[in-house]
Structure formats: structure tokens, C-alpha cells
Length: 209
Ligand code: ADP
Ligand code: MG
Image 1 (cartoon, protein in one colour):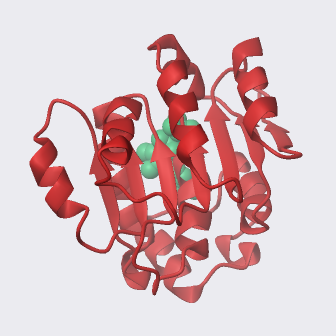
Image 2: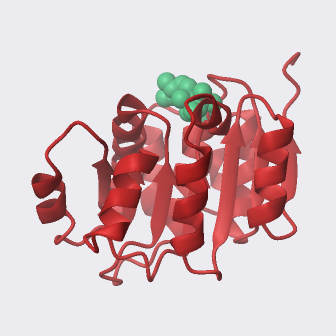
């Protein structure tokens, strides 16, 4: 059995993971976390329910600089519900490092999110439309965004977010780590990854496991 301890994580993060009741990292977590900690771009295909969220939330919580006042990581999700869920997972895993996550999504007052963005935030999680809106209006400063995660990329494209995702990527710093997660890999997703990722490590977990 592999332990989270073997993944060279901060004691504060190990303690938080233990409290979540996770005893053993899932296969995708075992394979993704060490690569993500090296700040390499990653393209991940792994089925729903395999634990992809913690596979990026854990390294993000590990890598962000607590001292930095501007947001350093952006996670894009296809739905509001998923944005909230991922934000909660990040808050739980980053609890003892006092990592601040913020969820941004549509059909919710822009002004309140604008106010929340004035507070220190390490990791922003959001749906493409609202995230783009905040970047364009200057309420979300992306100048220090070192990490980009595209979660549930297949769902994202099914929902017609490709154009907005690309617009966001073009506004982010070129020097960054990009991770893309999906349950399925289509040609469009592969094209997206080759266009915006650098020498991405490809991790595919067999669906028949
Ligand atoms: P995916 O994004 O691949 O669909 P999730 O990240 O949503 O999967 O995780 C699915 C479920 O598994 C969640 O309820 C999560 O809390 C749980 N989970 C994740 N990692 C572990 C682990 N290492 N041990 C036990 N449960 C886990
Ligand atoms: Mg997921």
C-alpha cells in the first residue's frame, strides 16, 4: 500500500488529508501529485470518481506561496456546483496552511465577488464566463497566475466553453504550469493541450481497472 507520506507533502497537508479520511492516495493521485509538484504540464485522463480533484488540489496547496497577495492558481470548472465543490476541497486540504480559495460563477452578484476578490486569495476556482468577465473588468488580477487547471475538460467543451477557455488562457502569464483533467480525451482536447501546454506529461488511467 502506498501512503500519502511517500508523496513528500508538507506535514500540514498530510494532517488535513488524514482528517478527510483518505488513507491511501488513489491511482490518479499517486501518479499526478509527484509530477505536478515538479511544476510540469500534465494531461490526465481518468474516469469520474477516481479522485482527480485532490490530485490537483493537493499540489496546488503545496506549491502556492502563502505570502503572495495576488492569486496564483486558477481552476476552471464547467459548472457552479463543481466550482463550489473544488473550492471546498481546496479549503479542506489547505486548512492548516491557511490557503484561501474563492469560487466565482455566474448567476450570482458580481459586486459581491468583486469585494471578495479584494481579500487575499491564493486559488481562484470558477466557471469560464464569470472568470473572463472578472479578468476583463480588472477585478481579477491574473498577473501572478502560475498555475492553470482545466477540470472536466470534456464537460467544459460539451457545454460550449472552448472559446471562453481559450480567451482566458491568452490573458494568463506565459510562464505557468498547466494541467488538464478529463474523463475522456477527444481530438479537440488533445489539440487544446498541444496548443497551450509545454511538453505535457500524459497520464492515462485505464478505465477497465
Ligand atoms: P473525479 O474528479 O475523478 O470524478 P473526485 O475528485 O470528485 O473524482 O473524487 C471522488 C470521491 O472520492 C470524492 O467523494 C472524494 O472525496 C473521494 N476521494 C478522493 N480521493 C480519495 C482518497 N485518496 N481516499 C478516499 N476517498 C477519496
Ligand atoms: Mg472531477
